[in-house]
Length: 149
Length: 149
Image 1 (tube, each protein chain N blue to C red):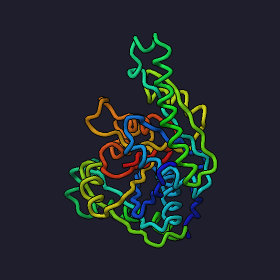
Image 2 (image 1 turned 90 degrees about the vertical axis):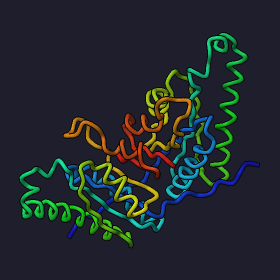
Image 3 (image 1 turned 180 degrees about the horizontal axis):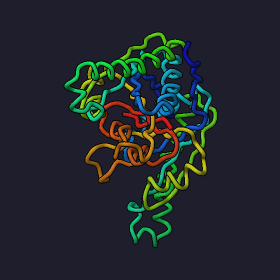
Image 4 (image 1 turned 120 degrees about the vertical axis):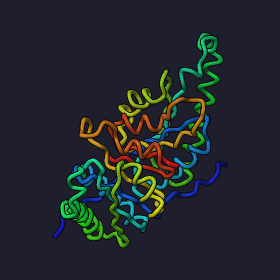
């Protein structure tokens, strides 16, 4: 007679979006919405305006910075709409700004949304970053993390 | 009008078991069986007899090595039974031996079982290993990987 196993269902799913990687986003979105709909979870969709995307000139020019914020919001809102069209009932958009994307997600967005699962697309190899943000999140987050390929 | 999102469902789920970490195994098992049952996926449950667990003396003593193999099989079979009791229809047990657990999983078990999702418990911090096997798998596998906490 073995011990009875309790099901494990995530109720607050946070999807991270990399505005520069639509293919990875779409795969990660597909997993996140499938889970959220099937298990009736709340879905947060977040992205961070990277420090390195804001140069000194831009940061001194409010209009340029506003344009970048606007572009990021548009990207996020597109994914929110796709999730709602898929049938997810509770979808929240979140954007943030920070020097390091992973720190911003770990220190600001996660405490704010309080997810039990983080869904990340896999960073492409040899991209503009020297390390993979998804892997850093998988390593440092205190919650479960899935890297979608 | 946004693009319609296709659901993403994993059909072959591979759960990795660390014989030394029953708590992490159990959490990972709960996620794996919930997914496998809900989405009617095949479930593989695997573990690797570590090279460092086999000392030279043992490796020259077939009986001692057989005992270690037997103990590992017992652990895996317990999880297989729990998965079947939970209602997962297709469960396969796999054990293997190798110097590095992660390499053995990546190079032998994954090509053999051909999963589309790898489920790992999170390694405890400050354990007997200097690096986290789950994070290495999340980094190096060509398929989606979830680290359960």
